[in-house]
Figure (tube, rainbow, N blue to C red):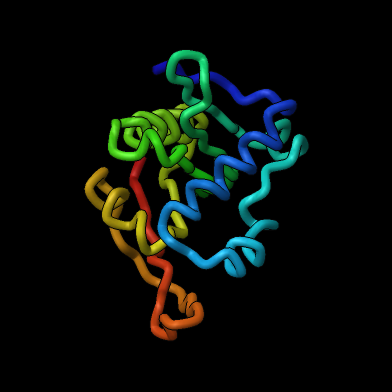
Length: 151
């Protein structure tokens, strides 16, 4: 596994990867279409935010993108290609993201987590600091955990 800066020419591939990773959790196609704007990565995003990919045997297995802030940075995206989930790719990406934020002067890294990913972040050291309502059809009480890492 190797981590490197994303190239803006990879925006389409990263967008498709994010959608495939979100679909892994069994969300309905209608929801995935609705969420497409939030899951899409643009060339401008890659040029303006720290965005890194992890490759396995030359293929992109996942990526992350950070939104810099004064004291707290936000983990805007962290997605792992479904075939690589559970193989340490996400952990490597997250550690790299935390190091990137720390090196750049952040005190905290904030995560607006998908409910399916919250346990992963908590296992990696995040603290739950809140939640926001995020109802979907069939799950009116669904919430997105708000998490924070001290870096």
